[in-house]
Length: 307
Image (cartoon, rainbow, N blue to C red):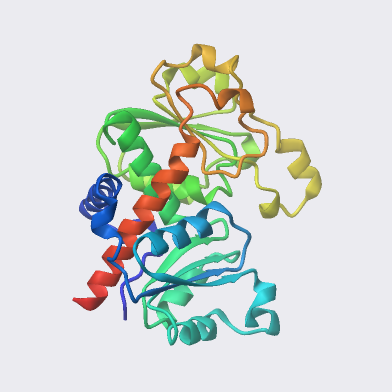
């Protein structure tokens, strides 16, 4: 079975660091990588809406000299006829060399990896995890702060359904000297299994808060997330919670001057557009770094497959 990346623990801390080193080298020397995947095809199977992640993967493969086969939306594929994920990826394995897949159901990426004969990269499975967004997040923190250690990281918004948050906590918990501040409404707190597996088991200090202003001055990183309408069963609950936290220039007055403000995007209204011009706003840099780290991951998995 080809090696796949379904969750962030699939990559060791040494592999994470090497991927970021490769991404840095791609940024510095793009010409060295422009033919690296010539003759190879990436299949992007996106059964859930996406802009950044899908285009990031496709841009990554094109810039490596490869080609892309794309499925966007279950309605445009045989999934609309009832085809299983297993059968879909067995078919796609006949056409492509590597798959990036997004699916609304938790666990779908693992099923894909178990049935494909080529590498599968999880591009988000329901509310579970999103490992390549985490790679982009780690890359952003390392580029902007110069380190991944000895920081206070604040995560704010939908921490219950936010797959990017779950993956980032898992990844950062492996680095030294970190503490976490978890800011959310009571209804959207980090699930117990994430706290138990990533934080409590490693004795990593964390606190929970329902008030952003109370804790913003302690943070080195502020990771904002949107309240995700698509994860709610009840529209009333969504409407009640969606505006729980809105970051404004006024709220940033008490923050550190070197705070790094991040967001996996898309943004709805949880960060005021007035914050975009603040030099601490790094969320559009995240988008760019995401392309380079996905290039590094594609190279890694394809070259391991040849080994």
